[in-house]
Image (cartoon, rainbow, N blue to C red; front, side, top):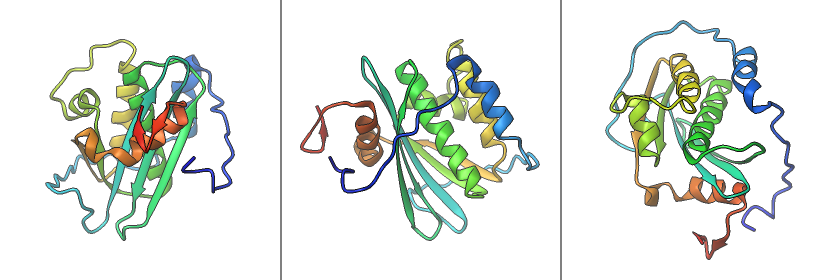
Length: 185
């Protein structure tokens, strides 16, 4: 309902689940050198040339969707709500949202990024606090690390769900989840 005033067109993802990783690498060759200059930022604000990205995924019994909000260093914001047309788990849809968002940042020529998400598992796997031992999540983790290496500086930070409500609602709209007065139902 919140997005009905906009003229949106749904375009299904063309990749077949087993082919998604190969298609991703074919479409996103890395033209950048891989530097290891990570910069830690202790606030939820952009600094200098840092882009900020919020991500979230939503999974229902029949559909999955992702929500992404990207903020440029000069505070312009873009909102994305995408429906996934293949089966995936809750954690896989979180990684899908993150990978899609990193791809958008890459296409916007962002070189430094501050990534915020409410999935404690995904963020801690990327920060090295947790090992990724799931055979279903390892390909997602590898793609995310590959994309992260193309940035000059990138920081992943876990935030509570209450501070991630915009992308949570975008993801739930895409997944067909029922919203009551703007809150998940």
